[in-house]
Length: 267
Image (cartoon, rainbow, N blue to C red; front, side, top):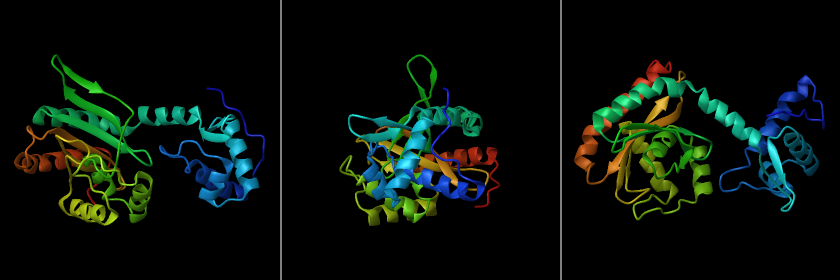
């Protein structure tokens, strides 16, 4: 995809870092639930003056990081962002290092295994192993899952700062997906504390009735949790007694992936 050079301003080296921070503040305003924003809405979210927002938005539009919807007088993330995201996913070491462990976990449990990374607001599935009626299939998708009511989401969120948890609470509004969904911030914080203590998360029909899931965190070489792996099945195939037996297996698999990514086991 050809890229145009921004024409609006040429920042010197001293102001370049500050300008970059402001540009990122503008881009970070856009979420799955707030995909279209006006200049006024961007101003409100960033606290930047109108002239600054106009200048940054125009430059981001020039390089296809933002698109303008003339009918609605609003902006949305541009396709260039999708291109960058596709490149990131295609070149993640995570895929290369995780795949054999995911396959082993699937073969050991006979259940569906998911690998998710955090995209800023949701957990995005980048690999799924499941057995259909004919053969083993590896599926790569851009399927998003909530953080507050899924095994992978809670396994990730438990090891993040409190500010992220509060932001997720505001953006997601804790929609009750089932009668078992955690719907308040204090309840979620208590649940995350339990997950940190035991090292894994359980989605007990919180996202979908009849489905139970075990999730465990994956760390990068610096020990930061940035992804999660899970095993999921129906409640009939995965009663709580089986969850207790499978949880250590999921945790070990997550640990193997983390080690292959360079984590030395010290957070």
